[in-house]
Amino acid sequence: MNIAIFGMGYVGAVSAACLARDGHDVIGVDIDPNKLDLLRKGHSPIVEEGIQELTSQVVKAGRLQVSDNVDEAIGGSAISFICVGTPSLPNGSQNLGAIEHVVGQIGESIGRHDHYHVVVIRSTVRPGTVMDKVRPILEERSGKRLGEGFGLAFQPEFLREGTSIRDYDNPPFTVVGGDSQRTLDCIRPVFEHLPCEFVGTDIGTAEMLKYACNAFHAVKIVFANEIGRVSQSLKVDSREVMRLVTQDRQLNISPAYLRPGFAFGGSCLPKDLRALLYIAKEQDAELPMLAGVMSSNQQQIEHALEFILQSGKRRVGMIGLSFKSGTDDLRESPLVTLAERLIGKGIELSIHDPNVQLSRLIGANRRYIEEKLPHIGRLLVEDCDKLIADSEMVVLGLSDAHLVEKVLSRTDGSHTVLDLVGMPGRERLNAAYRGVCW
Image (cartoon, rainbow, N blue to C red; front, side):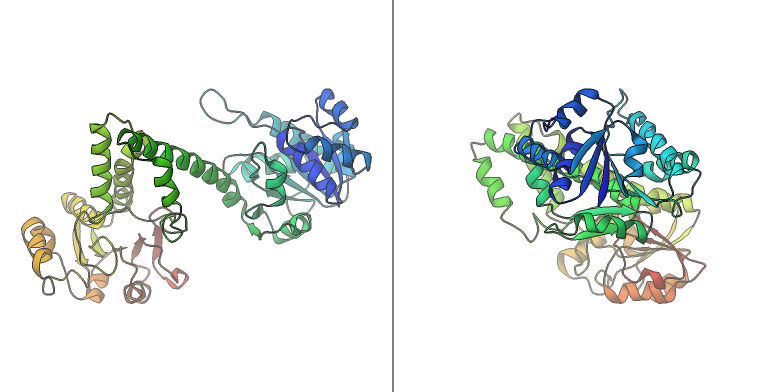
């Protein structure tokens, strides 16, 4: 395939060399004459293990050429990858000047050629940039409409400096957000030989994925370092602690918990986090990230509360009160906190939880609700159907299949459903729907 790459920086130079090695005819475009001169001589403009040898090889084979002529690159290629920089401005926002400039040039060139051309943004950009900023420029400059004269996509890159060629050849997945299936089908042959799944998705998801991955990597590093500091203060081997943490592939290094939802609660997580923070305080070990976890968790409750209050609905039925399905444990349940906040705001609240009905509570749990939460105990109802019928808004806080089915089958156009658990089958829902953070 004939491919153009705009921007011969780190991502562009590595991508150009690897694509040319894989048999594509690549033309690299840059405004820096020094970079172009280096590449014409078979030298890569970046320092990276193996890149000099690979660049020399593909240049000598004639599969990698360079130019500063945008029209030449567009006219001789089917796909363009834009790899220009998006540096931070002083306020933390992105400088999109380089992208806007090159996209304008590409748009003008697309307007002068008849073939369908796919433009792929690889530079990291905030969600919405491709469709809200890139698309209008391309359409205005080319005189063509998206889907007719050109396709548009975003492909996040996951190349680590120092190991980029190995990362290119062994990615965890290849994710491309495209405007259409036609666009995805044009890009797929470029990467389908790689030993991973090719994932086609929408452009906004692909844009956000890059930020989510990098933020997660940053969080993991800081988490390990905070555990390291408090462990060191206690003369505990933090490397051994974290080695064992990563051995757990069911909960620790897995999809478990890494799914947007409601706040955490229960008898373990809040208690043990507070205890760890107290230990750190005793040892004069600063743990600012972990110290912020409880306030962030509380913010998720406030987020749900704000939606309910802003909806204007006064009769709210909450399905669930315990901190998770399958238990009657109310200790530090975020649903209890939400219920108390709603009561305090004057909401007409009713609650159904099959595991927390007063008639079934025994021992400590019965005493807990009678002594600590009598005002909530009086709001419990045993008939879920009646709760739904009497409510304007239904808050689904448990994922039990029979409760989800009640919400799906008993709500109608007069209801709003606030989903805290990610209910399956919501395409069957007749009510207005809102996920707590999706």
